[in-house]
Image 1 (spheres, rainbow, N blue to C red):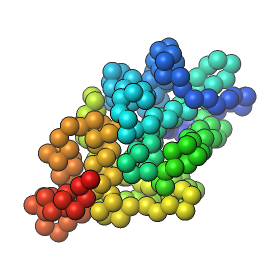
Image 2 (cartoon, helix red, strand yellow):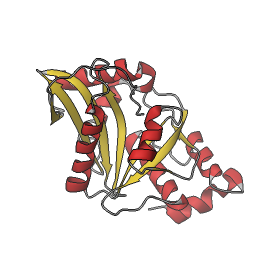
Image 3 (tube, rainbow, N blue to C red):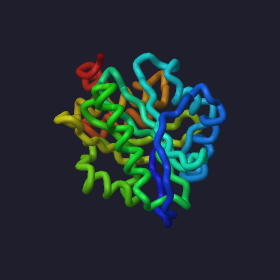
Length: 231
């Protein structure tokens, strides 16, 4: 998930507001905006997306969706979720319409989302999946002091998405700390189970490869690592 692309923009007034997931037209408009900006292959299927933004899907996840709106036109969206078990925030998707880019809209939406994470959800760090070859990866590390987590991470094959190598980066907030190796295992397990809703996380090939990247013994070390971090 994630990634928006840089382009030219135009100046104008806009406001931020939360998505009302009960308004199907707003959910569909946000979904369409993400597909156009990010490419359909980088956005989960519509059925899964409606579950992602619904607070009734999983009591251990609180969806947070911030919209940028100008004259009733949706021009930007950031989709996130608070992972209650770990006090972590997860930024799933972000997009700004091409004509409105390079005006700080993404930064403002992201700041608003993080504000909700810290004020309402008490998160200690915020996680994003990023392509290290994109400009946003450098901005996260340079401007927002995010750090890459110690694992070879993959967005898993789920919800109509294909398995894709990405960087998992974490930004501490409110004097929080970012996960080390064992904390990263627990975090990825939580992302796979709560965000991607994978039932058999332990048997998932992307998860197994991530575990192997954190050990010197390869996938055989999976059981002992999982036992240490099992909740």
